Amino acid sequence: MNNPISKLNKSFESRVRLGIMSILMVNESIDFKNLKEHLQVTDGNLASHLKALEKLDMILVKKQFIGRKPNTTYKVTDIGRQTFESHLKALEGLIRGK
Amino acid sequence: MTKEENQLEQLTEIREMMSRSSKFISLSGFSGIWVGSMALIGLAAIFYNYPNYFYLRYMYNNIAYPDYMMGGIELLGFLRFVIIDAALVLFFALFGAIAFTNNKSKKQGLSLWNDTAKRFLVSLMVPLIAGGAFILISMYHGLFGIAGPLTLIFYGLALFYAGRYSLIEIRYLGLLEIVLGLLAAIFVGYTAIFWGIGFGLLHIVYGVVMYFKYDRS
Image (cartoon, rainbow over all chains, first blue to last red; front, side):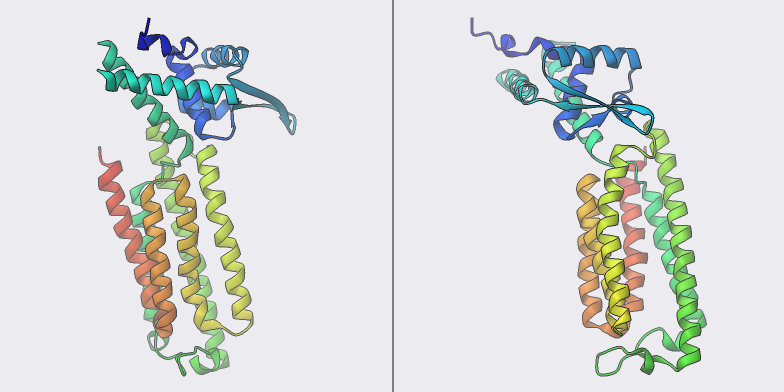
């Protein structure tokens, strides 16, 4: 019952999602291009993970135009921050508990 | 890979991603060495052309006045020389720093002009521009002697502030520049020597330290 692994959040299982969340935790907001550069993944891969996180209410998406260019920025939501923090705690607990 | 190793790796990766995405890490050690060398060359040019006015001469009761420094036409020539010299130093220093940093960021797989670089530069520029304007205003009021030390102080403040968005060593460099600027303000006739230490030597030492700590691999 008290299995520590159960505290790990399923939504952060992929490397890309962990990366997205880590970046958003320390940056107020970030756009697609810079996010892609930090994570070094393809557009499609990043977009699908972003969409998934958005659906889970972990991140907030803001679409706007800079001049005529579309620019999409991402922010972590309060829920996302809390969830990610407890996920980190669970990870640390697992390692220390060993 | 065992489960624990996997989790440890995840944590390391998270930490690295947090730092990499919030800090400007492409500033190369070579740019420090280059900038410091340019500053020393610029100072050497002044010393070579105006050895008598390099220090001490513009001291009078511990206050520096341009009138005691030298007479009208000669002063204009000296000031023009210093301004052109400083502009050239700034140009070559910036050019080299950008080139070396571009090189390093390419190696890291980052673009030179990304969000962290922007944040670093903006936080650097705000104290620098405010300080530069303040120095020009104090010169307008005839406070020439204090202008030199103030350049070091404002440069140090800018580095200390912008260092939050880069590697910690930038903040230490900033603190040292502030201390030097304060010392230069006490020994007001020796500004050129403090410039040599602050803009020349410190940059070179910083560059060498950064090179051995981060770049060499």
